[in-house]
Length: 404
Ligand SMILES: Cc1ncc(COP(=O)(O)O)c(C=O)c1O
Image: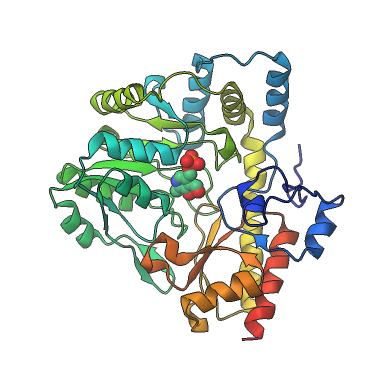
C-alpha cells in the first residue's frame, strides 16, 4: 500500500503533547486541516519527538479488531509477541536475541530511571556524552547521582566521541553506568561498529555497565548502517542493557511499551527484581501489545516509505538553507528524524535566538541548550511532519532572519 505522508492529520484536541501543549489544548478542530493549518497564526510545532503521521495501516486495523473484542482485562505478552520483537531484530540487523533476554518497560525513559536505581547508589556518577537527549539528566539526578559528561567533539558540524576523555572519566570508580545514545539524539550520528567497540572496550575495562538507548535504531538514513551495541560480541552483550521500542519507529509513543535486551542473566535478574519490587512488573496494556506485535510483523513496508519521506524532508531543508539561509549549518543526518542546526553564525544570544524562532517566526523547535551547554546556539528540528508544514516553518524562519 502507498502511504500519503503529505497529509496533515489534525491532532488538535487529541491531547497531543506536541500540538496541544503550547496552544492551550484548543478543542476547535478545523474542517480542512491543511488549509486551516497553513493559514494558522499559531506556532508550527517541530519539537517533541513524535511524528504527525498515522501508524501503519495493519497496526490501525489490528487495534480496531482488538477493540472490537471488547475485553481488556489483565494481559501478558505471549510467545508470539516476543517472537515478533526478536524476529524484527533478526530481520533488520541479523541480530540474534533470545526471547528470554527481553524485559518490557512502560517506556525507555522509565527504563533509564530504573537502571540508575538498580545499579547506582546515591553519590555515584553516570557517564553521558553531551549534547544528549535531556531526560537522561533527570534519570541520573533522580537516583541521587551525578551527571558526568564526556562531551562530543564537534568540528565543522561533524561529531565524534572523545575517547581519551572517555577513558579518563570511565576510570573514576564512582562511575557505575554509562548512557549511550545510539543513534545519537540530537546530533544525528549513527555510531560505527568501530566507534562502538572502542567505547565498549573502555567501559568494560573500567567495569562500567552500558545502557544503550537504541530507540532511534530503526530510523537510519540512506548510506548509513545501524550497529546494535550488543551484537558487537558476547562481552558487549554481557555488560549492557539495550533499550529498544516501536515508539519512534512506528509512532506508537503513546502506547508506552519498550523492549529491553539484557543478555546477562545476573543483570537481568537485578533489573527484573527492581521492577517486581516496585510494582512495575506485571500485566501489560493489551492495545500496546497488539500494536507492537503487528508493527514488527507487518510494518516494514510503511517504514521503508517513511524513511524515504523523512530523507526527502531533510533534503528539502538542506536545499532551502543553501538557497535562502546559507548562514545556518545543517548537521549531517545519519539517523533519527531530528535535524540539528547550527544558528551560531547569526550571532544571537540565547534569549534573542529563542525570541526570533518562537515569538517572531512562530516555529517551535527544541532549544539546543536543553541538551547540555554544548548545544547553545543550536536548534533541533523534528522532520517527521508533512512537507507543507515544514515548508511553512522554513519560510517563516527565513522572513525573520532576513529581517534581523
Ligand atoms: C534517545 C531517546 N530515548 C528515549 C526517548 C523516549 O522514550 P520513551 O517515550 O519510550 O520513554 C526519546 C524520545 O524522544 C529519545 O529520543
